[in-house]
Amino acid sequence: MIPIVVLASGRGSNFEALQKAIEHHQLNAKIQAVVSDRPEALVLEKAQQLGIPALAVPLPLEGDSTRSRRQKHEALILDKLKVFSPKFLVLAGYMRILTPSFIEAFRSDRGYSRVVNIHPSLLPAFAGTHAYAQAFRAGVKVTGVTVHLVEPDVDTGPICAQESFSISDCQSESEVEKRGFAVEHRLYPETLSWVLSEEFVFRDQKIFRNRSWGEVRGERMMQPKEGPYACQN
Ligand code: GRF
Image (cartoon, rainbow, N blue to C red):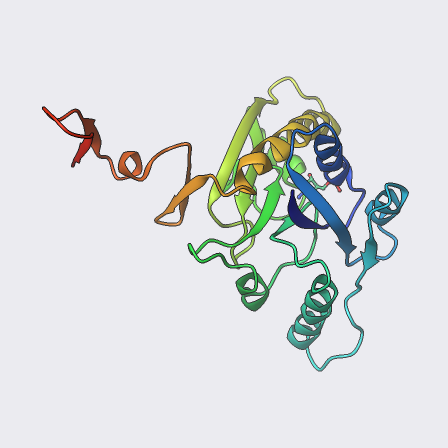
């Protein structure tokens, strides 16, 4: 089972969906802890009820600048994580922007970050907060959900999976949200099932699932007259 830690700030419906998928053997992972920057977040209560360590790590009040407070905060989180040594960090509604050095602590030898996030839009459209509301207000007919690896800029990083859905008949932001959450709760565990086991090719900052290096490089498989298969560019 792949050890993960979930970072979340809110009600934790994605955390619950992940834990359910684990219990149903659809996701080969173990949530070792849930960490929240908001001590009152519902997600901590939910984790506790499930017997999962729930840690509140609020942003420290002291610090000369916002930057130093953020750095202190992340150092506190990294310190708490030491005992769990998770392979991946899974963000599920975590409302803080991670600094480059924090992400570096989870960089794999192959160059990608082992921090995963779910965002409620088809990135790069509607980055930032309240993405379902942004989509509804913009009057788009289709929106969606993105699962991506996290890089320092907000809502950027290699895209692992995207799923779109129509909102042309939605009358309110909450209708869009309802449709979106149904997708999120299925797509996140489904995607993590192959992301956590690192069954992908990473090239040019992109993730390619279920494809060989040769296919990613545009090589055609050729059957030579004799001997094993060979590649041709
Ligand atoms: C979700 O919409 C997720 O895509 C976004 O934050 C929200 C978290 O919801 N990153 P929940 O706390 O998992 O219910």
